Structures are given as C-alpha cells and as structure tokens.
Amino acid sequence: MRACLGFLVILVLAMILDPAIAGQLATRCQQPRDEGHCGHNVVRYYFNTHTGVCESFLYGGCGGNENNFPHYIDCDVACSYSKVGLPLGLSKGKLGLESYLFLAYGIVKQFIISVLTAFTFHGRRRRRRRRRRRRRRRRRRRRRRRRRRSQLPYQVSYRFT
Image 1 (cartoon, rainbow, N blue to C red):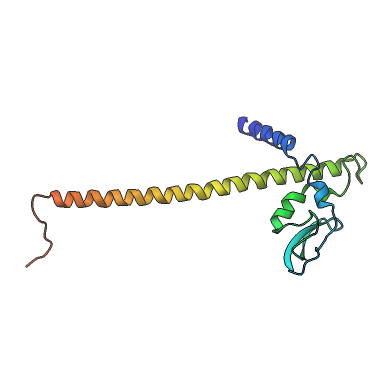
Image 2 (image 1 turned 45 degrees about the vertical axis):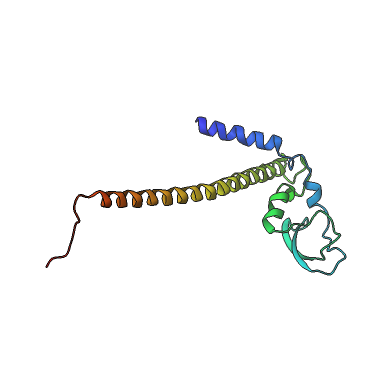
C-alpha cells in the first residue's frame, strides 16, 4: 500500500512540476511545419496538429520554427500533451471528461517514459559496473591459484609412466 501511495505522490509531483503541463511545449507543437530556406534536406520530425501524430519532413538546415525535432521519440514525448486537440474543459462529451482523461493519459505516458529512460541509463551503468567487478574477481582468483601452486611443497605430476 505504501508503494502505491508513493507512486501516486511522485505522479502528482510530476504533474505539478513538469513544464510541459504548464503549456510551454504546447505552443511549440501547434506551430505549422516549416522546411527552412537552405537546401540540405535533413530528415526531421514535426507534430501535425490535424492528425495528432509526429510526421517526418525534409528540413533545409536553417531557419524554420520550433516544431522541428531530430528524432521521432523527441517529438512524441514533447507533444504528447497537445494531442488532445481541445482546450481544457471543452470536450465532445457531456461531462467534459474526455479531454481531461486524455490529458491524464498523456501525463502518465510522459512520466513513465521519463522514468524508464532514467532506469535504462542507470541500468547500463550498473551492467558496466558488474562486468568490471566480475573481471576483478576473475583476476583475483587467478592470482590466488598461482600463489597456491607456487606454495605447494612438491610438484604434482599427472603423467603416468
């Protein structure tokens, strides 16, 4: 029960402290696609407000606007809140719950992605540490075996004549 309560506290704190919820990133995602004015043709991603999905486009390399992401996952994470497409409080439903539920889904999705990203990075670091420890243990075992062999009072021979 305490773990569940702790998770809820972390979730509420993430909702309060996350700047994307305050609407700072929503304006970025609502901008139209802008290819820029140079001719480099780099594949980038932008959030399409009509379809509600991140799509690829050819970016010129200079100019453009903020709705320009190098990777699909960056676009999806940054614009997951604005997928509702409706202002808060306005919805197709009678009670106005659809937009709130979808926003809550976006918040939970963003929180889970950020937590998994942190644990994945930390997991790699842990695996590296484990490998180093295993190597050290193997080296120590080899050294001990060599010392024991050199300290034997007589030479052990396995040859039979």
